[in-house]
Amino acid sequence: MIHSENTDCILSQSSESKLIRNKISHLNLFYDKKTKKIVILGGKHYTKRQFMKQYKQLFMMMFCWIKESTPNNPKGQNFKQDIEKEISQLFINMAKSFKKINRAPELRTNLTNTIIEWKYNIANTKK
Image (cartoon, rainbow, N blue to C red):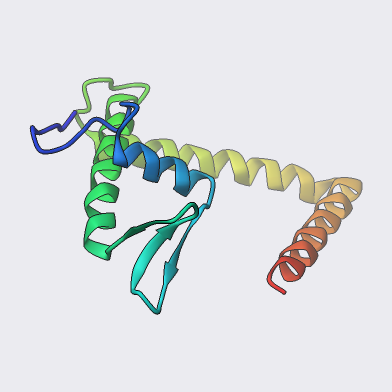
C-alpha cells in the first residue's frame, strides 16, 4: 500500500482520512457556498485543497485494497482485466435475473411495483 512519511494511516484512531471516510459513509458533510469550504457536521471546516488531500489518500488506499483483493489475482497483475471480468460477470448475472423476472408475470409485477415505490420515495425525499 502507498504510504509516505507525510501522511497518516487511515486506519489509525487519530487519522484525518479516517474521520473523512466515516463522515462520507454517514453523509455528514456538505459544501458551504458562502465560505467555499467543506463542512463536517460538528463544525470542522476544510478548504477544497485540504479535503482533496485527505480524499486522495482515502482513494489510494481503496484502490490498493481492491487491487490486492481481486479474487483470482491477489498480487494485482492484470488488475484492469480482472476488474473488467468481474464487472462483466456481474452484468451477466443481473441480465439472467432480469430475464427470469421478465418471464414470470407475478415477479414482473412485483418488480414494477418496487420500482414505482422507489421512484415515489426518491421524489418525496427531494422535497
